[in-house]
Amino acid sequence: MSRTRGTRGRRSRLRFDGWIAGVGTSSGTRVVLGHWQRSPFGPFSDVMIERADGERLLLAPSRRTADFVGGIYRFDEVRVVPVDVSVADDTWTVTAGPLELRFTVGRRRPAGVLLRSVPGALAARPAWAALTNGPAHLLPAHVRTRGRAGARHREWYGVRDMRPVGAVSAVFEGLGLGAMAPVEPPVRFGFGSVPRKPSLTRVTTTVELDRSAPSASR
View 1: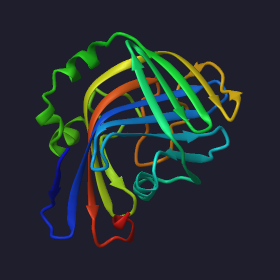
View 2: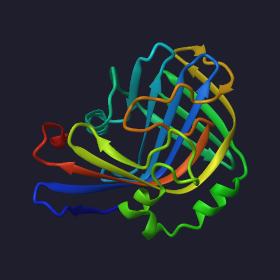
View 3: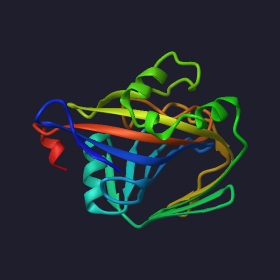
View 4: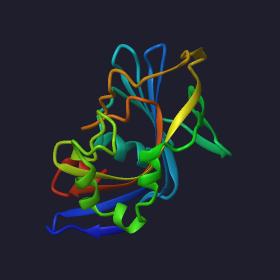
């Protein structure tokens, strides 16, 4: 994890290294897990949920992470709850307050094999995210790797690996969310969505904060 000053005195860059899982369910609820092994806040995980009616919810493990993520992305409700993630072989188990999520991941497809060969130092550079953004054929539709985070900040996603999700079991507030389904419509937390096909993606995320903006103090 590194924290660097930007080219302007009032800008600084924060880096997060970890995994993002995006899954849809037949109930219409879409779930995005961020599992960050290295970050300015230490290791942590958070969950973003968009329900069928469009309501967006953040589940974060501390007030500090909730304020930061909530200041970068858009939510209708933010809850601070314990978020626990365990990984055993190809099975991920997530417990986050009212959410119980379990999913399995399958073998890499050709794009995942190619992305996995990207050196970590290269993936951490915003230039790599710019190269894979937009019409790049390595990444699925709806996926953007650079854009505006909030009103005045910028963000880059350096993609390093991608694996398909094979099966999903999800319960929210005691109710089953149904079988695995595409992430459709795309989620609306930030400037881009996760892949339409449920996937687990390794990323190095760089957030450039504008320290003159009110949310930058979060």
